[in-house]
Figure 1 (cartoon, rainbow, N blue to C red):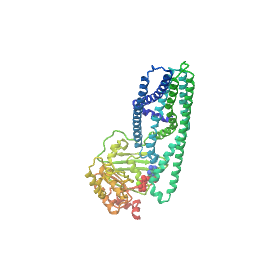
Figure 2 (cartoon, rainbow, N blue to C red):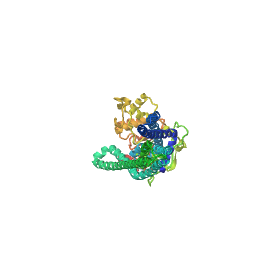
Figure 3 (cartoon, rainbow, N blue to C red):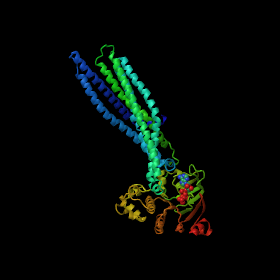
Figure 4 (cartoon, rainbow, N blue to C red):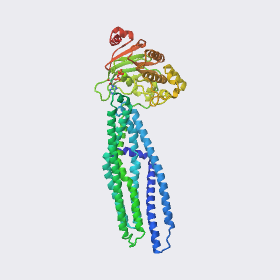
Length: 573
Ligand code: ATP
Ligand code: MG
């Protein structure tokens, strides 16, 4: 239950709207009870009057009352739905934005802990489930309590014993059944949440991995696993539905017993009258109608287990502390960038061995550096430390003499253009995929930059409106690289960080791109990770890494002369 507290607190934001919703729900319930009670009494009273031959019966007032109650019930229900759903959606909107805003700074370190499908599931399905809390639990519960109080008080004007009996039965039902069904529904609710999550996650994996699964003939096995979770999920749903049916049956039984009891007791006299007449009908119909108010409550508590499980899962995301935080205010982005790494070491969370060790490096403003090294030696990791995807374990990185931790996120991002090793293509238009890097850029600028990187072919057909990614044109590996370079050019920052920008390009295009990069980086600082040995002469310095350490650095000619690792790389060509 405690898992729900933070979510209950969220409701405070819309407390008036929510209170109005509950108030309308109560008005509707009372109108509904009033309608049945009054009309029951009215019909039998008219009959009794007819039999007795008394003709001075005022039928106008009760008739108007019945009509009034019917109208209030209809209007009340309409506005209650309107108000309570509106309030719930507002709370959900806030909750979803809140959860998402907590998710953003977690990237990428914190997000790695959740699988993608899992994350989406929490953000969508679990947040949705939390809407039960108000609509299905709080509102009906408060409504039922008020109805019990009003009915008991109202009936006690006529007969205290009857009123207390009915009130007692209702209160007893309300106190007994919900906890019972909460207990009974809890394991099923948790199972439902669990299987729903694992099914969705398997489905996403299956859809995304189609090609591999088919190629390696693992498709059927995956399908079987998925079907097993689906069956388990259905089984949980079946059990949940069985419980719902049971709770309704028990409710119906209790209400039937209460009605019979009322009939029996009222027949013996109401309020000291020996001949209660039409009042019998009043009590019977009142009992019948009042139990309607209780009906949703047991069902609600049965779902509470599911709500709590979802709340826990959302809380797990919300309570994550980002590993990397940025100050809000800082100096603005610099014009030129000099970088210094001072005895930097880095270890990925959960790993025992550091990936980088004792990296000390001074990069002057305007210097062009190539970073070489065997696969897995930590080159990309080093770049990621510069973008603060991760923070150093020990040591310090400074940008123009200031520690990079002192820059706001906006200033740091404005200081560097990055071409990452894995380029992400958004499922959006070509224009959107480029505007990401420079939201203000005009179409002409976008076209020009595409031409510069040799991607003018993409402009054929629908031009910048061409849809890329999922549901659109997939780009080849080389096109993707060039798109990333186009983004970096548009971003136009003083520091260029390039992670194997020419990977997957043919020798001709590679040369073009390297020429282009050399030209645009003329006034900029550039750090380029590469596996290619061609064209390294033009770099001011070449740094060779191995096993997380810098093992040699210098100009091409110097490194060739010293016959170290760089020389060996060339020998192997
Ligand atoms: P390549 O030339 O193949 O791109 P690289 O030099 O860029 O290699 P990195 O990507 O920096 O290598 O990885 C360095 C080491 O850190 C590798 O052994 C890799 O498995 C490990 N590593 C990378 N990312 C993570 C991570 N998120 N968590 C744990 N270990 C990681
Ligand atoms: Mg790499």
